[in-house]
Length: 269
Ligand SMILES: Cc1ncc(COP(=O)(O)O)c(C=O)c1O
Image: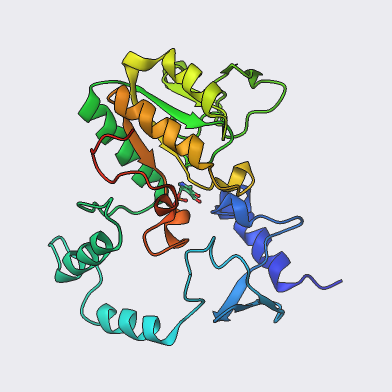
């Protein structure tokens, strides 16, 4: 039988991309779907099959594909240049706009990916506190920074005792030092989480939380859980980091607005 366009593309891809993909999540057996074009909520693959796109690039395309206003604005900018070793008015306007959306945002630092944003947040918390450890929820995905990915894929075979979850690496070769500097806490279990955190009180720079972690079932964090973590951070001079890479688009102010926690350094409770 004649190979399909997708089969030919995948065979070529395997010569130049590890595993044939540049993004693990798009892999399908026997090969990924190859997009040709998209408009609004519909995407057409290279075989000519049109589908409704429920993924929208993991929800980043909140306006759908190729929205005319976005195409027009981006095309106009491309003709004026797209990247400069200089500052731009656009970055100032965009930062002003984002700061106006959430009382938690005093200032914005733009980065290229969620992984980098989490990494920058962790590094800032370490610089601010002079401490090395971070705490994160077991199973939560925060990108691929060594520390942030710990225990994202732990299983009954290796996750340890509930009152002292193990730090389980994702990548082969993760340094032991990275594992030792990550405290793993259970989701939506404030008592156990706080008891675990208390064992590391003096050395913890930050508690990292996705308010609705998709790999933990897309269940919103309980108010009690968020409040307990925020209180713990305040009492122990640690930084509370919301990872809103996905959830910031849930409401105009982001999902953190669900929990009535103070923005910035105001102490809570
Ligand atoms: C909650 C969360 N944090 C961080 C990341 C990492 O973002 P990126 O893929 O842009 O590095 C993701 C990616 O889906 C995410 O869902």
